[in-house]
Image 1 (cartoon, one colour):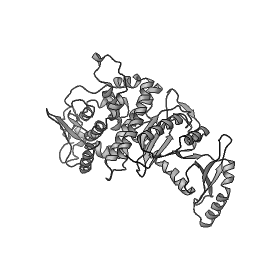
Image 2 (cartoon, rainbow, N blue to C red):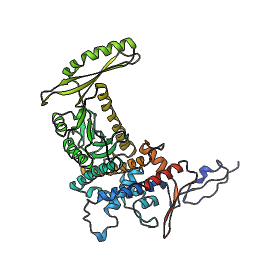
Image 3 (tube, rainbow, N blue to C red):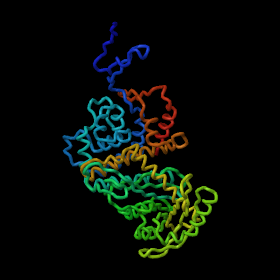
Image 4 (tube, rainbow, N blue to C red):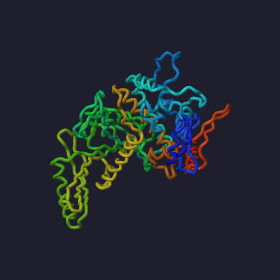
Length: 462
């Protein structure tokens, strides 16, 4: 019996015997290059950050009380390391520390590529997240709101209509985090963070301006009124006489919220849960929808309106309803009535269309959760978890700026995961000389022309 001869491979290579006899020649795979990176496109995000001054502006309000003689990493260094790590897909502090020697990460964080010192370790990053007090965390949140509206002003100096969408989302918890409670609606222990987005006229993008972690039993209206007051005030200071519209789901339908919206003189479209009185008001339309569904064997929706006042409302308000009967093959028809409280003067069907447009904010929240892991809130204290939420929100703002720079290209509506894969996750060699840093990416890269176009537009960001 013949024994197969094995080629001896160096210890620092992957066991090349796995590839022997598969290709024309034996293949050695080594992890031995200190100047190569898989994040070659990350300079796009670094350039965006420097052009708009995002991380530097947000860090300006943080007071670093550490002994300067013993500090290797400033708060700005740590802030950038966490934001860029999250943006590149390393959401956890442990992951962030593991790429501390990556030359692309050093480049975007402001460290010399040739510097043999790595970026901050996991304990240092953890101390940073836990070291911020309540005022500093609130300052970060307000800073994010301010910058988002300033950037909106750059893109749309004279908007006709500005729309604010607020939405809560479930953030499941799996430990003993403070203020994580069992929520019967979601049937799990969780936090309930709230996110705010602004959009302008026909721009399809909804720009994130607010991200706040809340206890698992928080009502949607909690913190909403102060947020709306300061946001609407800032929008009116920033823009010249814009129409402002607020869209909210049924969880926000509280009497004091309606009073506030009318006091602020804004347009509003707020969903509302049904009840016996509203069902009677929609009964005639629902009966007609049942007849049409039975006749044509297809789903039918009719729209109407009525005046309505609860005991806790100061006055009557306009309620638009959708009387829908859902048809599904092999099943009995199902009634589906929906109600929206509004002060818009449009026809009922158009009001419903305006309300349904808020559904795109749910896609933005999916990006935050699925692509950036904003729900990675596993700290044993509540405030550091809020810091993580804000760090992730800042990373998302960078991607929204990148998406804006790609207007008119195939990626103008690309999700975060797609933008990361095509424009950031590129193998490259980074070298540094006295005069410049050179990032050498593969000439065969399939999206190189798109990357060049993005880089040219990012460089021109004002």
